[in-house]
Image 1 (cartoon, rainbow, N blue to C red):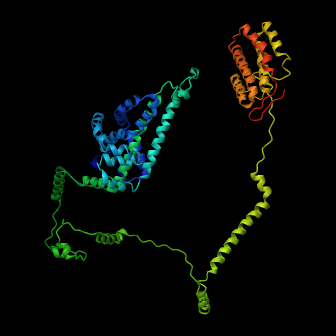
Image 2: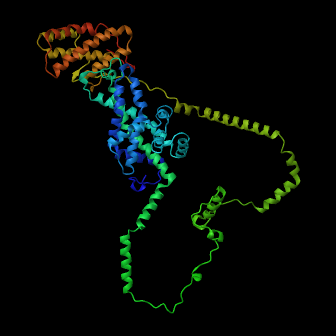
Image 3: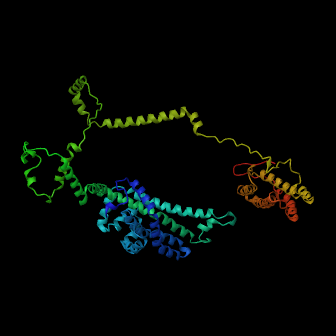
Length: 547
């Protein structure tokens, strides 16, 4: 591990800031990670496709269960790319069998359900620890910043599910409505599904889209804990300082030559009259250095126990460089001296009496009874307030249902009058006469206006903004709000109205005249269809019409 080649900004971060760093890492190296993930997981996906469609849930479970194996080559790429050594796809796939065999049984059984799996994987793969050493290392790493690792697993699972559902919805939204495909059966009914493995492919794609981000965020949490525990930022800072101060031999020789040239041009001052300093005069007495410490050679190992280290650290921290003094002013209550005589008087004359009452148990019973009386008084006061303002409270919290506004019948629909006065007494006969006169448009318009009037009379809430197709749908919704005995008659009326609407749309918008026999049949069936039962039907909201 060469910290000089690191491609990230090494500094202590908060837990969620480290997760954000992981997202940036996954975004930067997403393409090589995605390529390796697809190639490493392709054999598992091929085996899942061989499972019969009746056991399709086993394929889903198998792809999800073996996710830790697909994630190990992604961690290998990140661990090298962080130190500016991005491996190739071929080298990563060559190492994949060896990476997958590391503690395979434990990773696929007990550790599979670990919520901190993304943060724990570098300890297994990069540090190669197992057993008690691994547990000790994880306990140190989990002292801080381990909670986001659990949330990371939960959010990752939710993203996989929502991505799969979103892709299914996207495919369904791109299917034209004219094909009349039952999309619910296409995706969720395993007996009648037309594409049984489409769900599996979308689930596999969702796993692949979230895997690089999941592994990168876990690795970022692991790196953040290493930075805090091992002070990587301080190490890098010292190395940069040392690199700045270290000079090459050529630059050092050039500096010495330039200095000699400058000194040769300066006049030489005379120092003969000045006394030369001695070593004794330049040395300053130091009381902090003991003779035993001076005589001890440098570099010898000293065994210092915990107490000695604590005392030494305490002594250093008590120095002026490591301490700070603050002056705070607060207000405190000072008792007056005049009141002290009262306390002395009571203690002198009644002190013995008060001492005898210390062990008296009657005070506890008295206090409990007083507490009960106080609570009763509070409850009584609340009851009095509620009774006093009962009318105001009833007006605030008791809501009275508003009166139903009578439904107004529309007078015109689609530019045609739909009132009773605009219709003849015998609709079938009048429409048949218009048809025989060669006026098919007027005949169908009369039938359609009369049918709309009957539909409004039955309780359908039709407005001017509705279309012809919506009117048919509103009539079909009336089936759920009528007795079972009348449903058969209403079904016949729905079929008649739908057929009439279809021919009316072709005539009104497409200018296509219906066949004479078909138009004559519609005219003859109108009275028998609409006038056989004239009882109005109420909708779910209680709306009804009157003829």
